[in-house]
Image (tube, rainbow, N blue to C red; front, side):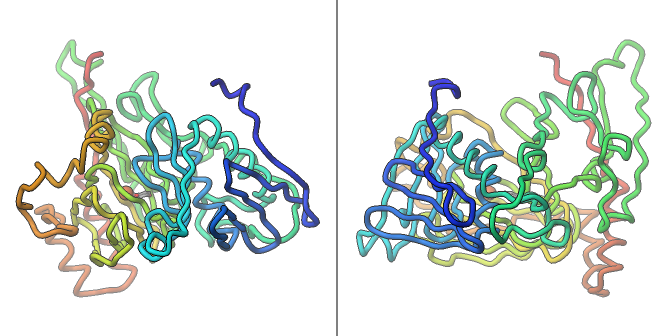
Length: 380
Ligand code: PHB
Ligand code: FE
């Protein structure tokens, strides 16, 4: 099915100027403050700003890896061709009461419906990707739109940011000023000294400078690709607007400041762990959990993704990260904060000794010295 063939089912507009939408037996509507979701066995309400922030990410990320929970009830599960739209499916209480509901929808249909809803429900002045301090209000009767913000280019490098023909570096001239919270980040770029004949095979750029100029929050960009290994750093502030249910292990490397992660069982929502990550900390998030991050200051996080297309097939046959059926888990269940990066870990002592903003900034400046992302350019 092509995009042109997709008929988005919409009604209205209602008294507030917004259309309502249908996907299978799901119904979506909004008023001045809330998004309302209905299905045959239940109904749900979310603050419309939280709903739009989650919707924006589901659309921009093409339903991401595994599950995008908008909250503890509503969400999507990606099957890479079709998507499950669910209510209460990964919520123990809804499941036990048999009130959960799932519709499996062609990816094109749910994507076009979600895009139409996002465009219609996002008012002028509200940017679902921006931090709350850096955007306007989502509330009120329909007034204008913000198409530029909700369709902004998503950085997905083919090899690595800065290489010829690939995603460009950010600077003031191309509309990427340094963010207010990253004013201390040094903006130099590495010198590259290639052996004669190898100039086309090596690239390098200042990743911290690049991230300091990100206009968005909680939006990992692909900055380098090595076969199925993707470096997806992002800048974070306030709350990750979705609760991500993994379908593969993900690695987090905290590049600056601090993020607090709430970790729950992926299927039931039972609390599993609270992980506090400070600059230099590294953690693996296994594929049987879901997680949501809280970043008190704008921070830099490297999300390291495994883009293997074989992972979803493994899911169809069982649980990929729990090993062979019946095998004893080699580690206790839950999130395993794995190790600290040597040099960076020492700098954390300084952060501990002076737990104020200025020192977090100094740690970032120290970490910065070894921060250039360099890659030998893979020949294709
Ligand atoms: C995640 O779910 O792993 C995730 C998503 C967005 C971010 C960071 C982490 O910005
Ligand atoms: Fe995740």
